[in-house]
Image 1: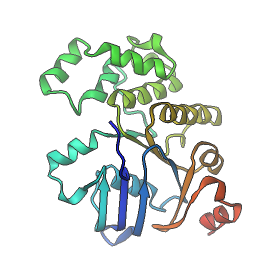
Image 2: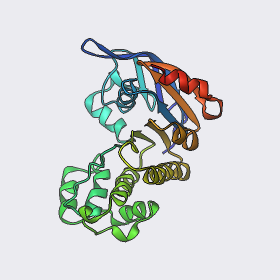
Image 3: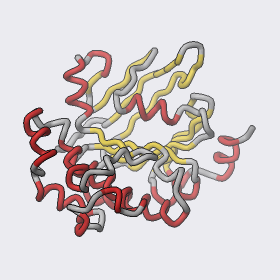
Length: 249
């Protein structure tokens, strides 16, 4: 599936939680096949922005469009249909570790499978070829029937990525995917994300704390500070001064 208009568009969006303002007057467009890093200190609004892009929360003010659809105009069923095209990668893998890898991969199909097929897949794995192809893309095809809790942490990360590939979304949103791993694994994971998106033409929006990784793996950086956009630039135009101002106390 291809999409010509912006994948995501926010128009003067604000989001509050009670008396706390998480985002204020944010306007941004993200197009197909872009790799966008969200940078900023803790509390800057990065996770809130990702949740808006996924339709997990609605704006308090302004307009959020996902794949051309204005979120607040969608019924719950229509919103779920849109969300099927948006993959999520988390710090925690959200895998069912006492099940085999293929069962975890099949979870990527749940948004489009009828209930009977989802239930059957727990007993008899469905669409094995699709799962095997996704696992091969992340480099561990031999683990298809392994128990997930017997994999290393790095292998479990790969399974989580393969599950997103099974879902076959238009865009992938990743919320601090390397925050809790060592530097070597951070590079490995970000290399996988970048290469998979390049190879499959998917859009990537990833929140990061590591400036060097943002510069090496993304073609655009959006800096957030105190719920506002501090800068939105191609990576090559982001200077050390931009970064210092972003994190100044």
